[in-house]
Length: 267
Image (cartoon, rainbow, N blue to C red):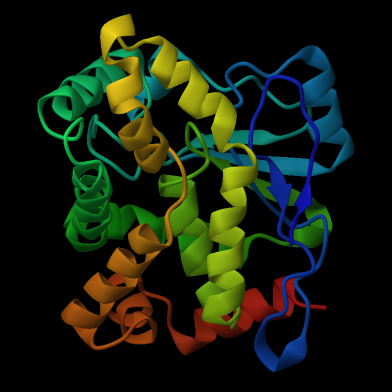
Protein backbone atom coordinates (compact mmCIF):
# COMPACT_ATOMS: atom_id res chain seq x y z
CA UNK A 1 0.00 0.00 0.00
CA UNK A 2 1.29 3.43 -0.90
CA UNK A 3 1.81 6.13 1.73
CA UNK A 4 -0.89 8.77 2.05
CA UNK A 5 0.18 12.38 2.48
CA UNK A 6 -2.32 13.90 4.90
CA UNK A 7 -3.66 17.20 3.57
CA UNK A 8 -6.72 19.20 4.63
CA UNK A 9 -7.94 20.57 1.30
CA UNK A 10 -6.56 17.95 -1.09
CA UNK A 11 -7.78 14.37 -1.47
CA UNK A 12 -6.06 11.20 -2.58
CA UNK A 13 -2.44 12.36 -2.32
CA UNK A 14 -0.06 9.40 -2.15
CA UNK A 15 3.66 8.75 -2.38
CA UNK A 16 4.19 5.71 -4.63
CA UNK A 17 7.39 4.79 -2.83
CA UNK A 18 7.73 1.14 -1.82
CA UNK A 19 5.85 -0.45 -4.71
CA UNK A 20 7.93 -3.42 -5.85
CA UNK A 21 9.01 -3.10 -9.48
CA UNK A 22 11.46 -4.71 -11.91
CA UNK A 23 13.93 -7.16 -10.38
CA UNK A 24 12.22 -6.93 -7.00
CA UNK A 25 13.48 -3.37 -6.59
CA UNK A 26 11.20 -0.98 -4.69
CA UNK A 27 10.25 2.40 -6.04
CA UNK A 28 12.10 5.05 -4.06
CA UNK A 29 10.12 7.16 -1.62
CA UNK A 30 9.78 10.89 -2.05
CA UNK A 31 10.03 10.75 -5.83
CA UNK A 32 6.62 10.15 -7.43
CA UNK A 33 3.36 11.45 -5.97
CA UNK A 34 -0.18 11.11 -7.33
CA UNK A 35 -2.93 13.45 -6.19
CA UNK A 36 -6.28 15.09 -6.61
CA UNK A 37 -6.50 18.76 -7.49
CA UNK A 38 -4.52 21.29 -5.49
CA UNK A 39 -7.09 23.99 -6.18
CA UNK A 40 -8.42 23.90 -2.63
CA UNK A 41 -5.10 23.29 -0.87
CA UNK A 42 -4.69 25.21 2.35
CA UNK A 43 -1.60 27.17 3.29
CA UNK A 44 -0.59 24.25 5.51
CA UNK A 45 -1.12 21.85 2.61
CA UNK A 46 1.24 23.65 0.27
CA UNK A 47 3.84 23.88 3.02
CA UNK A 48 3.49 20.14 3.58
CA UNK A 49 4.02 19.45 -0.13
CA UNK A 50 7.02 21.76 -0.18
CA UNK A 51 8.40 19.91 2.85
CA UNK A 52 7.84 16.64 0.95
CA UNK A 53 10.25 18.13 -1.61
CA UNK A 54 7.66 18.37 -4.42
CA UNK A 55 9.47 20.32 -7.12
CA UNK A 56 7.32 19.68 -10.19
CA UNK A 57 3.50 19.66 -10.34
CA UNK A 58 1.83 18.39 -13.53
CA UNK A 59 -1.86 19.24 -13.89
CA UNK A 60 -3.58 16.71 -16.18
CA UNK A 61 -6.95 18.49 -16.15
CA UNK A 62 -8.37 20.15 -19.24
CA UNK A 63 -8.07 23.91 -19.63
CA UNK A 64 -11.70 24.54 -18.64
CA UNK A 65 -11.17 22.82 -15.28
CA UNK A 66 -7.76 24.38 -14.63
CA UNK A 67 -8.94 27.88 -15.50
CA UNK A 68 -11.97 27.62 -13.23
CA UNK A 69 -10.01 26.19 -10.31
CA UNK A 70 -6.24 26.66 -10.70
CA UNK A 71 -3.86 24.60 -8.63
CA UNK A 72 -2.46 26.39 -5.61
CA UNK A 73 1.22 27.08 -6.13
CA UNK A 74 3.62 24.91 -4.15
CA UNK A 75 6.63 26.95 -2.96
CA UNK A 76 9.75 25.95 -4.85
CA UNK A 77 7.86 23.83 -7.40
CA UNK A 78 7.49 24.34 -11.13
CA UNK A 79 3.83 24.20 -12.12
CA UNK A 80 2.97 22.74 -15.52
CA UNK A 81 -0.27 22.03 -17.34
CA UNK A 82 -0.50 18.94 -19.48
CA UNK A 83 -4.20 18.32 -20.24
CA UNK A 84 -4.73 14.75 -21.40
CA UNK A 85 -8.25 15.47 -22.67
CA UNK A 86 -9.11 18.09 -25.27
CA UNK A 87 -12.21 19.14 -23.33
CA UNK A 88 -14.80 18.15 -20.78
CA UNK A 89 -15.62 14.44 -20.52
CA UNK A 90 -18.57 13.99 -18.12
CA UNK A 91 -17.79 11.23 -15.66
CA UNK A 92 -14.05 11.90 -15.87
CA UNK A 93 -13.85 15.71 -15.83
CA UNK A 94 -15.05 17.10 -12.54
CA UNK A 95 -16.77 20.46 -12.59
CA UNK A 96 -20.34 21.46 -11.82
CA UNK A 97 -21.46 21.31 -15.45
CA UNK A 98 -19.92 17.87 -15.97
CA UNK A 99 -21.47 16.57 -12.77
CA UNK A 100 -24.87 17.95 -13.78
CA UNK A 101 -24.69 16.26 -17.17
CA UNK A 102 -23.66 12.89 -15.78
CA UNK A 103 -26.39 13.04 -13.12
CA UNK A 104 -28.94 13.71 -15.87
CA UNK A 105 -27.61 10.71 -17.79
CA UNK A 106 -27.86 8.51 -14.72
CA UNK A 107 -31.38 9.73 -14.02
CA UNK A 108 -32.44 8.58 -17.50
CA UNK A 109 -30.92 5.11 -17.31
CA UNK A 110 -28.86 3.99 -14.35
CA UNK A 111 -31.60 4.50 -11.76
CA UNK A 112 -33.05 1.28 -13.12
CA UNK A 113 -29.77 -0.57 -13.63
CA UNK A 114 -26.58 0.73 -11.94
CA UNK A 115 -24.54 -1.47 -14.31
CA UNK A 116 -25.14 1.28 -16.87
CA UNK A 117 -22.84 3.56 -14.84
CA UNK A 118 -20.06 0.97 -14.77
CA UNK A 119 -20.38 0.28 -18.49
CA UNK A 120 -20.36 3.99 -19.23
CA UNK A 121 -17.13 4.72 -17.40
CA UNK A 122 -15.46 1.58 -18.75
CA UNK A 123 -16.26 2.98 -22.19
CA UNK A 124 -14.63 6.29 -21.27
CA UNK A 125 -11.45 4.47 -20.28
CA UNK A 126 -11.44 2.78 -23.67
CA UNK A 127 -11.92 6.18 -25.29
CA UNK A 128 -8.95 7.62 -23.44
CA UNK A 129 -6.82 4.66 -24.47
CA UNK A 130 -7.66 5.05 -28.16
CA UNK A 131 -7.79 8.84 -28.55
CA UNK A 132 -4.70 10.13 -30.44
CA UNK A 133 -4.63 13.43 -28.51
CA UNK A 134 -4.73 11.62 -25.16
CA UNK A 135 -2.07 9.16 -26.27
CA UNK A 136 0.22 12.01 -27.34
CA UNK A 137 -0.19 13.78 -24.00
CA UNK A 138 0.50 10.66 -21.97
CA UNK A 139 3.58 10.12 -24.16
CA UNK A 140 4.74 13.63 -23.19
CA UNK A 141 4.02 12.86 -19.57
CA UNK A 142 6.22 9.74 -19.64
CA UNK A 143 9.03 11.73 -21.25
CA UNK A 144 8.85 14.31 -18.46
CA UNK A 145 8.89 11.63 -15.77
CA UNK A 146 11.78 9.77 -17.39
CA UNK A 147 13.93 12.88 -17.75
CA UNK A 148 13.27 14.28 -14.29
CA UNK A 149 16.04 13.77 -11.75
CA UNK A 150 14.40 12.80 -8.45
CA UNK A 151 17.51 13.98 -6.60
CA UNK A 152 16.18 17.46 -7.38
CA UNK A 153 12.78 16.70 -5.84
CA UNK A 154 9.54 14.81 -6.36
CA UNK A 155 7.05 14.99 -9.23
CA UNK A 156 3.36 15.28 -8.32
CA UNK A 157 0.69 14.77 -10.95
CA UNK A 158 -2.95 15.59 -10.40
CA UNK A 159 -6.34 15.66 -12.08
CA UNK A 160 -9.47 16.49 -10.07
CA UNK A 161 -10.24 13.45 -7.93
CA UNK A 162 -6.94 11.71 -8.69
CA UNK A 163 -8.80 8.65 -9.97
CA UNK A 164 -9.16 8.39 -13.76
CA UNK A 165 -6.61 10.55 -15.58
CA UNK A 166 -4.12 10.26 -12.74
CA UNK A 167 -5.04 6.59 -12.48
CA UNK A 168 -4.04 5.88 -16.08
CA UNK A 169 -0.91 8.03 -15.79
CA UNK A 170 0.13 5.99 -12.77
CA UNK A 171 -0.59 2.71 -14.54
CA UNK A 172 1.71 3.76 -17.37
CA UNK A 173 4.50 4.82 -15.00
CA UNK A 174 4.30 1.64 -12.95
CA UNK A 175 4.22 -0.53 -16.07
CA UNK A 176 7.35 1.21 -17.34
CA UNK A 177 9.00 0.60 -13.97
CA UNK A 178 8.17 -3.10 -14.15
CA UNK A 179 5.55 -3.37 -11.39
CA UNK A 180 3.24 -6.35 -11.77
CA UNK A 181 -0.42 -5.98 -12.51
CA UNK A 182 -1.48 -7.01 -9.01
CA UNK A 183 0.48 -4.13 -7.48
CA UNK A 184 -0.77 -1.73 -10.13
CA UNK A 185 -4.37 -2.75 -9.53
CA UNK A 186 -3.97 -2.42 -5.77
CA UNK A 187 -2.63 1.10 -6.14
CA UNK A 188 -5.54 1.99 -8.44
CA UNK A 189 -8.12 0.61 -5.98
CA UNK A 190 -6.48 2.41 -3.06
CA UNK A 191 -8.23 5.53 -4.38
CA UNK A 192 -11.36 4.14 -2.72
CA UNK A 193 -9.90 5.10 0.64
CA UNK A 194 -10.81 8.66 -0.40
CA UNK A 195 -13.91 8.08 -2.53
CA UNK A 196 -16.60 8.58 0.10
CA UNK A 197 -16.29 12.37 0.23
CA UNK A 198 -16.53 12.61 -3.56
CA UNK A 199 -19.58 10.35 -3.64
CA UNK A 200 -21.23 12.36 -0.88
CA UNK A 201 -20.52 15.67 -2.60
CA UNK A 202 -21.97 14.50 -5.91
CA UNK A 203 -24.99 12.91 -4.22
CA UNK A 204 -25.82 16.20 -2.49
CA UNK A 205 -26.23 17.82 -5.91
CA UNK A 206 -28.91 15.30 -6.91
CA UNK A 207 -32.54 16.37 -6.42
CA UNK A 208 -33.74 14.89 -3.16
CA UNK A 209 -36.38 12.64 -4.72
CA UNK A 210 -33.75 10.98 -6.93
CA UNK A 211 -31.01 10.45 -4.36
CA UNK A 212 -32.00 7.02 -3.13
CA UNK A 213 -32.52 5.73 -6.68
CA UNK A 214 -29.24 7.11 -8.00
CA UNK A 215 -26.99 6.48 -4.99
CA UNK A 216 -25.74 3.01 -6.14
CA UNK A 217 -24.90 4.30 -9.64
CA UNK A 218 -23.15 7.39 -8.28
CA UNK A 219 -21.01 5.25 -5.99
CA UNK A 220 -19.99 3.01 -8.90
CA UNK A 221 -19.21 5.94 -11.16
CA UNK A 222 -17.12 7.95 -8.70
CA UNK A 223 -15.17 5.14 -7.08
CA UNK A 224 -12.35 3.06 -8.54
CA UNK A 225 -13.65 -0.17 -10.06
CA UNK A 226 -11.44 -3.01 -11.23
CA UNK A 227 -13.53 -3.18 -14.40
CA UNK A 228 -12.33 0.30 -15.45
CA UNK A 229 -8.71 -0.81 -15.29
CA UNK A 230 -9.60 -4.05 -17.06
CA UNK A 231 -11.15 -1.99 -19.86
CA UNK A 232 -7.90 -0.02 -20.27
CA UNK A 233 -5.81 -3.17 -20.45
CA UNK A 234 -8.26 -4.79 -22.86
CA UNK A 235 -8.07 -1.74 -25.12
CA UNK A 236 -4.26 -1.86 -25.09
CA UNK A 237 -4.38 -5.53 -26.04
CA UNK A 238 -6.89 -4.92 -28.82
CA UNK A 239 -4.77 -2.14 -30.31
CA UNK A 240 -1.28 -3.59 -29.90
CA UNK A 241 -1.48 -7.10 -28.49
CA UNK A 242 -0.41 -6.19 -24.94
CA UNK A 243 -0.01 -3.28 -22.56
CA UNK A 244 3.75 -3.59 -23.00
CA UNK A 245 3.45 -3.13 -26.77
CA UNK A 246 0.92 -0.31 -26.30
CA UNK A 247 3.41 1.60 -24.16
CA UNK A 248 6.05 1.29 -26.86
CA UNK A 249 3.92 1.84 -29.96
CA UNK A 250 1.42 4.43 -28.73
CA UNK A 251 3.20 6.18 -25.85
CA UNK A 252 6.83 6.07 -27.00
CA UNK A 253 8.01 4.12 -23.96
CA UNK A 254 11.11 2.67 -25.62
CA UNK A 255 13.48 0.30 -23.80
CA UNK A 256 15.86 3.22 -23.32
CA UNK A 257 13.13 5.38 -21.76
CA UNK A 258 12.13 2.58 -19.40
CA UNK A 259 15.75 1.93 -18.45
CA UNK A 260 16.18 5.63 -17.65
CA UNK A 261 13.05 5.62 -15.48
CA UNK A 262 14.23 2.57 -13.60
CA UNK A 263 17.66 4.08 -13.04
CA UNK A 264 16.05 7.22 -11.65
CA UNK A 265 13.26 5.79 -9.52
CA UNK A 266 14.13 2.27 -8.35
CA UNK A 267 16.25 1.67 -5.27
